[in-house]
Length: 74
Image (cartoon, rainbow, N blue to C red; front, side, top):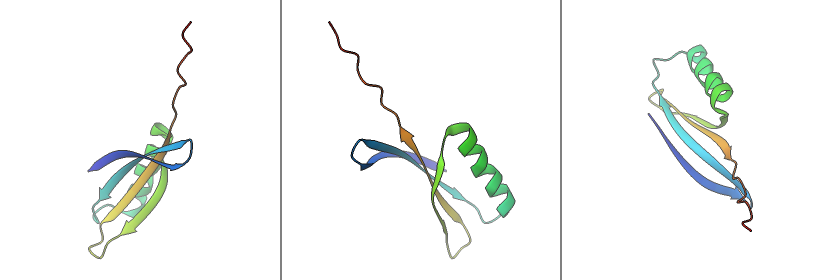
């Protein structure tokens, strides 16, 4: 159903992407609720939606990868 990958778009900013394929059997309201829940719970934001000729929705979500700087050792 989904796959996550990471790639930098701008210098210093890294994004993690997740691809989701949703069947045409899901209504628009169900898809909206699913995506809102993913955004609120997982910190994802909508990057892209494609609706294919067969009616399936291909959704790409993204979220920033926050890297913690390494502490300096003494």
